[in-house]
Image 1 (tube, rainbow, N blue to C red):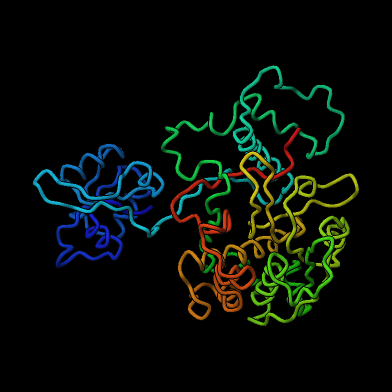
Image 2: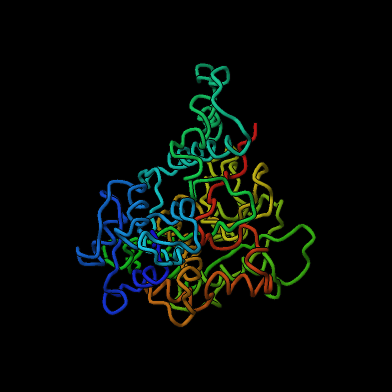
Length: 423
């Protein structure tokens, strides 16, 4: 959620100020929306105007009933034209869409975490819908096939594209106006895709991640061992020292160190290193047999997400920390930290470390200023924000030239399928 409207009053709303020049602030928000919930928790009732719809809020702002709208920022960017405006009483206003996000509301399909294979199936069905839109595929009954003759029971062999052929692609299933899809669009590689999913209540003490409750988990065993075994993926022709590398290899090393800092009370040096060339399947074998605890720079691939016939267990890919520059219609490269998927606690911990660097960038958090739970604070104290890691390894590149490797600040397209769905 963000604010839009008269520039001076948007500033009032963003700062929560209600006196002096802000005394006449009036915020329109829709009945039943999470935006209204947030505004009601932040302002007295006499600063709030409740409407029935987004369209009604726009009309009320235009006629002066309110001077600010609280709504999803992507909607505001699609519907509001920033610039000079003359009100009904002849006053001149400057209309803007504010830069500050106050709520995040990503919606997802939720499954239990004790059956990762089923969770993976659901995820790949969703990515099939994205892939269908990317490729211009849609509902086609002649290709909507059943499984009466299926002999294999491997989850990876399921016909995920049936989701498209039987129901249509993501864009066709999306019921909103095409111009009102906001972040729910396919990213073509020209805008950022970095977005930190909300952490939730990590500080409430009711889960193992709050304080690392002791137990027979991989997370606990690594901490007792006192060091992290990290594998780093390098190119086929790599012959250097990963400790002195930059670009993607250097960034992967830094994410392993940030992970170690989160595990070992801020100490980032306790890492045992292994390297694997990008086409070397032994990287996943080493992860599977426990030689390494995590693989950095792993490319997201469908064939490794599920348990395979070669006895490799399924693996879990973290939120990507680097994206390729392929076009929307091609398989995009997603690089992440990879873990075994049979230990939910460690997998979640690793993913949050990656998200923490993006979150720090969104919040403008400096290394020494993080106020998150202690292990996130320790990780950020080493890594800094995502931009700090990116600049360290790729140099000073303008955000507009970084493609997908920049924050999604403007509520731009956030979707793209993972590779592996092509027939």
